[in-house]
Image (cartoon, rainbow over all chains, first blue to last red; front, side):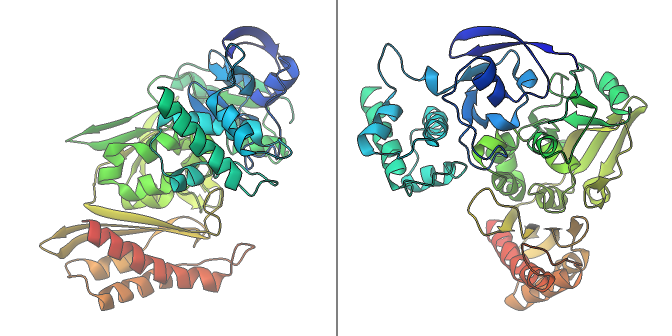
Length: 159
Length: 282
């Protein structure tokens, strides 16, 4: 089957690739480009570990064919820190202990990033509901919620 | 995932021609198809993406025709649309019940409907909006009422090459509400879904529409219950009669989610509940 030319902008870098249509965006990011920060959990869209931001929207990259992302702008967990400084959400996950094994963390952080970019004025309950597409088997979610709320405060204070 | 030929047509005619070929599948948001392909329950030889065909996305509202939703409009956009929240609240609420935000950012309303799951979360809201489904193919265009679109689980009246282009919602409701009966807060499929929509005049129910999902081989309207309500003033007894009539009109199955008996009982309960909230909102 023919490979397709695909141009992706990932974390600001342009990638011109030839990929098989059956490759998911997740596989393209991890295997073709080598950005392994994005994780593959359930591979059926249920766990959110593969969450990346495409054109400003959080999506489960395991459900996206890489060919359909051509021309789009993608942000992964590797693209959040700038000039050696962690993004406030990343820092907050460290400060609060919002992770244990860390496998779900990139997905949680990317989902949270899209939420706070969209609207900072969410209640804890609203964040809890909005993060329902991400599953963590370690933390019990309490510390994750704390991290997100701390990051919101931090972003609000500095913006 | 099996390999396949991938096409990105830029016109409906081109897409329709490709779609008439055997073992061809349309790709909208991909949240059903890609998962199916990974599980080898879907093994298309060609996949036709609709994302580059102009005119299939967006929500427009005008006074003559009501609201029109392009088939490729993301479910998340339907959920957040002020026009839909105002005039078709049940549909916005149904959209908000699908999967997670990440999935709703991918999934399209056209895909949710064309997939023809009896449990689709946007279907009850479209039923009570009396949605008209515009369909295009290389041979021309036609319109089918959402009521007549489905023929069975996963089955529609769509012929090979036919593509849903948009949903027209000509009949706003002054009050409507959708309840999804489920276990998990998010990422769950509906045990059943119930939407009610009403228009009132001086407290009299001028019109009531009730849409039921996952209680029959196709999504259905509870027409007997609707007729009971018409021209009457809401009372607890009336709503109880409507709930019972709605439940009597269902033919649910027992499956791993719940029993047919539970489904029927919950149609009664949730019809009353959604009607009361729709009336309160009207």
